[in-house]
Length: 88
Image 1 (cartoon, one colour):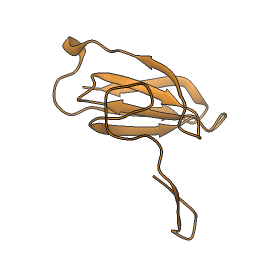
Image 2: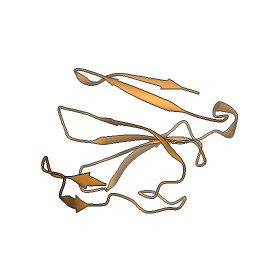
Image 3: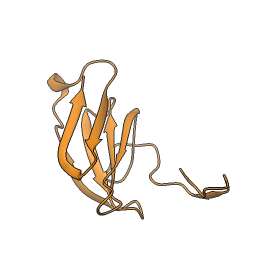
C-alpha cells in the first residue's frame, strides 16, 4: 500500500495471487530510487517481482521452488538496482 507523508492512504499495489502483478507471501520490499520501481520478495510464489509505481509487473525472476525456503528478504543499494541482495 502507498501512503502520503501525512499518513493518508493513496493506493494499493497488487492483489493476492500467483499471476503477474499479484503477490503471495511478500516478505521483503525495496524501491529503486532512480525509477520508483517496487521490488518484492515473495516466499509463497518463490520469486522476486519488480513492478512500476503503478503496480504493472515489469520483471519476475528466481521462480524456482528450490531457491526459497521459509522467510525471505531483500535489500537494494543506495544507487537503486545496481545491487540487489536477497536472503533466503
